Image (tube, rainbow, N blue to C red; front, side, top):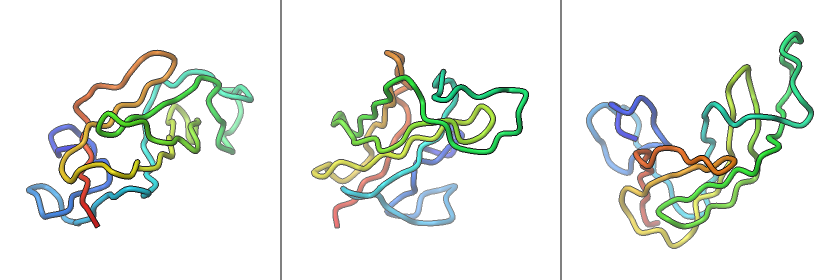
Length: 120
């Protein structure tokens, strides 16, 4: 994502204004994406208890990168109100900015999140 979007997915292959580190995603890389509102977990998290583990979501979470389904290896609550998705970048994506869309229980994230892909 661009700095004005408030978050970065991985990094960039080349220096861009607002970024101090250069990195690039390629097919097979595993990314950690973070979000809110993924709903229930198993087991349910008791809000009155100290948060002490990661709790998988009960709803199916899917991710597409550049319009191609990306394998999700984990989706769950990792902190109070914070969810994490571990996803592998699918092979064969062309170099450049690719849209990243997560879908949970039929609701999709905005399509403005971009991931910079490079060929290696």
